[in-house]
Amino acid sequence: MSPAIPRRPTLFDMIDAEATGNVSEIAVDAVFYFAASFRTTNTAICFILAFVLSHQPVYDKLRSELSALTTDMDGNISYNELEKTKYLVRFVTSISN
Image 1: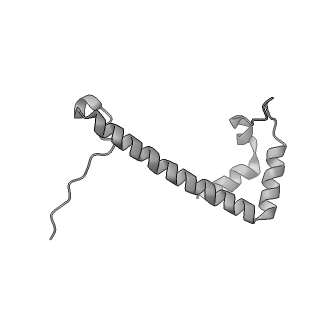
Image 2: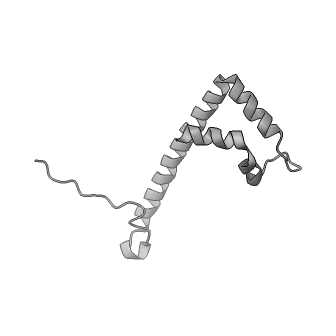
């Protein structure tokens, strides 16, 4: 039987820097978690774009729904406007589940 490997504290375990006294470990873990979440977000976005671009009816429906949204003077769509979209919300929810 191999010896148990000690569990390394996670960022959540080390949130209180005064308790651990090691701010550099917290910084390293914070960068690691940021990089890991960036990678998974990047993968999800690439998957969704590849799916949309390979399915013309989905692309057309999403484009028409987004085109109908009210934009500000710079052409940006607010988060509140995005929440009102029915097809986009259902699409992203179905992909993420």
